[in-house]
Length: 320
Image (cartoon, rainbow, N blue to C red; front, top):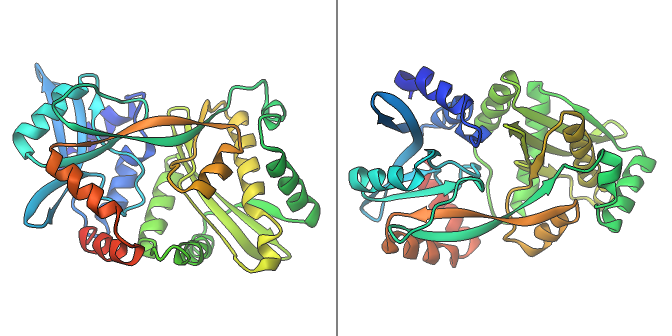
């Protein structure tokens, strides 16, 4: 997407509902994995009025334009602009088969597409201050956070290569339980460095007696903070220290310090994780997955019913 970088970046930087996942920094990290990004650019009277990053893949002999490709740790992409339905109709006319995930603030209505409504969890950071927000946090979370502090767990920022590789090791341990593999290490090195350099990401690591036992990455832009990915050591002696709780509390406090208005914790499909996220003062909020046809939605429905091992094989084949 190098040929449209400047025009695309200018539009995204000035569009209030754009996410960190729309940024050139994020998309270039995906491209470095071998996923070529094309950008649909929408104009009115020579003025750029909308954009949509797209990754084309062949699935079951179908050429499908993904925004984003599933299995690439990209929570949202889709169309940015004021006339969403009109731009999606243009995509359907010119590309035929597409699948997009729109940010919560950018929804459409109508019968021209297949719309799947999903939920994320968003905590509004609108209390008087973080201590007032703490009253919204579930009692068990507050207790576990205090325990982590009392036991000597500490939180630090670190963007060194060593720190990112430690973080990646935590992700592998955490994902392994779900038979899911993270993307190659290079992606996390690129994405974290790129977004950090542009002031759009926080990486927090939890340490105990000199050992890193937990970590999480938080992209942010346009007044919204995102809980992207996180991992922790699974040994009982470390899990009982609740490093993830302390990380969550530290990022919420930081959000208040920086005047960030919303904390999108990304995803509510797994019940245990959903309850953990709701416990930080969050509420369910809808977002849309939009398919160009019933056939594509049916394919997605069938995919969702597959076992974890089969899903991972499909993810690997699609994101190559």
